Image (cartoon, rainbow, N blue to C red; front, side):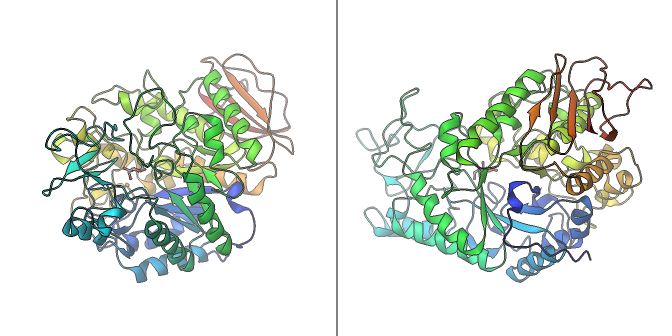
Length: 534
Ligand code: GLC
């Protein structure tokens, strides 16, 4: 075991590389077809050798798994499919021994409909204090047969469900995810205790799910497009919640990363003020097409919006909700948009993979921290899931038009020649793995110095050991059209060629790393990136 103990007081989060584990699909320790904590524990050395600094676990709590664990029934219990609290504690301790910090995921906007609070609210009936923890309302129309307002769902469909006594309750996601009433002090107190519960167990940070949705306009008025303020997205009252959370995190040197999807840069930055969340995911970058001008603008906008609050940027290519990078970058439309997802969109995977390699060097050279979603380091493509095996509620709620998010959640291939590619042992994984995934298996890529896994390992090692990476300034260099070239400190330069033709490299002393081989005359081919020292 590498005995690097993370120190608790530095600003590690300002330039960390954080690996996202989706426990259900990472490694299956007990062979029942579902990934689990023992699987993760057996693969900590993999993460440590990869060279990441921290691991973010998507929810591992007790859950009916209607929304992949984002429907939490009890934060203080690990779902039995994943293991036990004792194992989670061991995992946190072992990760720390490997030099890996642990980030857990908290889903404050809603709970599972199996949560004791919601069960009690259903039983207690209209007007009860139990119902006040949620948003229960009478319906509109003569007999209350119409939903209380017109709010659009974050997943398609309605946001209100009627219970047998006639009241309706609000759920921005599925009916199995009732929204909590964040103006209620009990809701606030409970989450403060949940934060303490996990910080006490040694976690270094918390990801805040759907972070801009918690506070609702007290009257729950209709949503009117284009009219501000939005009744539930980014309500001003939300910042008070995060200020109280920050005070708790500070007691433990804990950090937050918020899932804040907001188009307005100034409103986004408010979440990152010094007494609120430390960081937030960069969805501007994640959704950006593979085009030099657009990427440059996304990078500039990101740095400009973070600068006034002095928060570090984050760079994210994918996560458990979006199309895998290699597939997306091989399509005609290389951006990401939930609204345009469709079955059967063609992709040139060879091209997409080449770009994904270049994008790896780009993101790892930008100032700030980087999120790496499991399988990204293997170049996994989006899998087509047979209709009868789809599990994601986003698919069902779209009336079957949206393929859903299962295609990026397929269990990882570890060993090319083992059953289920070494993910588990005796039971078929909960989502089927494409038959040709042997070529992506960790053991195959281990043995191949040209593999994406090898590229990530080398890049992460260099990023750690070379001055100039991570937090700090960057300066654009003059470059041809379609080329992104920027300098960091200490002579470090990153060049990404999206121009479609080979280009000359700027003068340099040393080529640190290239995402694809250079031409024999030293030129950088299209859809490739390099790190140079001047
Ligand atoms: C976040 C999660 C997503 C989940 C949703 C509802 O967007 O990333 O997976 O479905 O919140 O909790």
